[in-house]
Length: 568
Image (cartoon, rainbow, N blue to C red):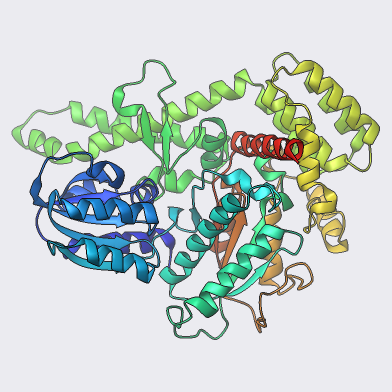
């Protein structure tokens, strides 16, 4: 069961049995859930003529009793209040209520009491409480993502909201899969432990009846880990297509905003990058930047051939054929110009920010030892006028994560150089990162230098040579997946919740990263699944990070931590 098809299936079931003209009513989170799985043209085919937000439907007084309202909402108290107001003076002829997660009994009573005109036709729970960006990758788009870095005492209510949203999202994934997992978590992370325990309580105690699915021979595994165990991956520049677009331009709910680029036609100012809707993207999303250029050239050549043959219209039959093929032709034209625009824009950014040079040093810091050479390389790049402030900051952070214990003196020199060079540099941000995700805080073997097997593997990789210096880094998640496949994930590092344990290898594994995933990691998961080892992985996180978002969360957490210590 892949996530995108699960969400599509839920949306289909909502829309297909309700005949006639419909309005789809969504909230700020379910609009993302639906938009990544279903295109506007597909909604039109299901007779959805209007999409409205739940917080604005009550503001308009215009009656539309000829429309049936299909509401797909998260079961929050705000949404229930919006519905109460709407049912008191309804604008639409019928109301079909679908909630993306478990409704409380009290909420059902409130809705029943509000429906005095008896226009609610049905109330159902459809567990699509996550944004399925790719078949094996989901996000929860939590705006307050920085909360995971703060101690529980700083802001208990907001931290509780953060945990509740993660528990809701993770349990919805398993309800959609019709499975109840055994749960493990990263021992060194308080928030991973808390989420694991709350999810377990929900699945095994509060809602155990709902999770009473037919048992599989080996229960699936839910593993909850903390972003701070691998702070390197979100700091790196990326060189594969999907990850690179997110790093350099930004992807939100599979859409890319290109309004900042001059002279683009209106229909190209926001483009969709979805492996479900774009065959070229699906085939190339994990390819290297160099190969993408070649593949786009091939696509342009094919399109030019097609355009040439279309110019050669001589008979009525030719014309009829052209008209029949025109939608396909238009679609191909849009697709070609979309990918050409993206690659052209990224090439420009790579050149402006000298990212080839910067990235080579980043990869060395992430993958290979050699402190003296690394210090010299970072120092030279800090002096380089063409290197941007954000790239300087990332280089110093990557150096600090790697050599915090080995070279404290050089580290202080880099801090001072960075503060002198970069106007944007927030004092103490690198130190805050080390406090959050330094070597003493981490569980995994991030640099492959603690465990004899990893040291041997790194040596072998060094001897073999790497085909591409820019993509030699592998996220820590890759090792975690290998450990699960081989049954080597240590209980002391990743304890089970409750008195559960696993006999045999799980066939389905959901790994949730508190603090956010990256597209480099989702690529790792997709490639692992394609290698067909009998274990299928799904990756989820609180947001999808690029280096800017990771640094923004870090800054916000640092700001709150500082103000809370001054208040005490």
